[in-house]
Length: 484
Ligand code: MLC
Ligand code: AMP
Image 1 (cartoon, rainbow, N blue to C red):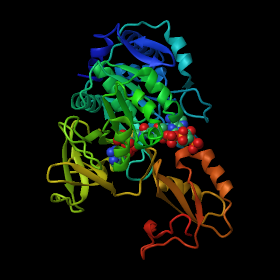
Image 2 (cartoon, helix red, strand yellow; image 1 turned 180 degrees about the vertical axis):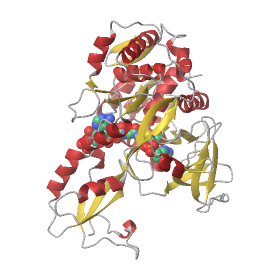
Image 3 (cartoon, helix red, strand yellow; image 1 turned 120 degrees about the vertical axis):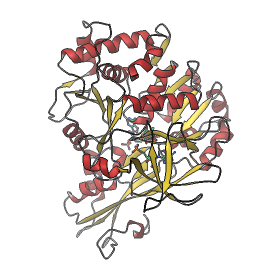
Image 4 (cartoon, helix red, strand yellow; image 1 turned 90 degrees about the vertical axis):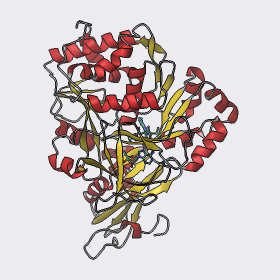
């Protein structure tokens, strides 16, 4: 079965049921089905075919969902771009994915594919048939290319197939007991697999009612919860840290119908889990995933949700923890997580070398370091690479370092993540420059070219970067910010 068949459990079987709320409007599953059918016909009419790529650079909105469904129904590959990305990052993705069409409301640099706004597409689609388009697709057909910095180099497109996304949705629906009786408040961005793979796919597989937000804004969160009364909520740790500011009476009203809060994409500090339980009366369920694999490991819905751990591998997913030689470690010992299963992606788009390097004898090498307790609970200890995760967004230091080296007077650059109580980590830059630093100019330059979460929170001038005899920068020897 394809995702289309899975979604028909809602789109067809629950066609008259309210499905989606957005800024005061509500649509049924049947209306969403018809709208995406029309768009699918329009894409075919515009000359797109199965296997072609379509990029979207949009904040959360219903059109993003319609476009995704139109892609799923036709075999066109959906390529979401982070709305916080700037020209340099967008140009890279568009150059790599070579889309036939780009959908955006933003001003864009000169790109190789025609641009459409969603409004323009909807208008054009009005005269298209509302029935299903022909779709010669199967489970191995790529559904989405999601760009991720991965463990090395520039961002690469992870090819996620219908089977990958279906396996993930079915696992979560069963293991987290998600049904049509749920109500989901979704504020995470649909351009990442957290909201796309977990949010959108469980919604359409289970057929619950979803209120979509353009983004999670902590000042508006209490009002949205109180008004909509969700039962289900997905967040990154920063979201839960933000919610800890809620006054107790409001927290009680927000959680009145809540059944399950889930956290993932970055480590949830055990203290946050405890404080959240005291305030909201719910134990957050923490799980672990990746763009390349969707969800891998989850705390149990029934049973102990153990703070600081991510629980057990989900059904159908094999996990091993190995040392540098690829030998499995013993209980309690740390090693790299390797995975196999129907959730593991089909490879990086047009990067056979990177794909080959990502696997060892058929096992996907996650780059995440973990240990397993005698009773099976898995604890993550960090990553093998120097990836920074800030507010659930990934930052690959080399990308920022390369940008800083292009700036006048910067001879050497090293970017590291420093702990931050709200965002988990934030990037800080260490620079070797002949002249005193103009921090303001550097920050402005970064803001103009990089997503806001990648802009270093401090620029620190050092005489030299500490290096090994082989010249590799030893980032752990850099002075902490404020002590240079
Ligand atoms: C953040 N910003 C956004 C934004 N999110 N702008 C537009 N749309 C969004 N969705 C910008 C703000 O403009 C601001 O920029 C800065 O980020 C901080 O904003 P804030 O209001 O202070 O937000 P904050 O309370 O810190 O919350 C941010 C957040 C956001 C947690 C809501 O970071 C977020 O949505 N993170 C989720 C990322 C995610 O979904 N990751 C999953 C990856 S998949 P400025 O210019 O003022 O600094 C994955 C696999 C897995 O990892 O396991 O799930
Ligand atoms: P991404 O490349 O954006 O898909 O991010 C995936 C990475 O997020 C994983 O490789 C982990 O390092 C991290 N991650 C996801 N969930 C968790 C979690 N619950 N705890 C710690 N790290 C996590």
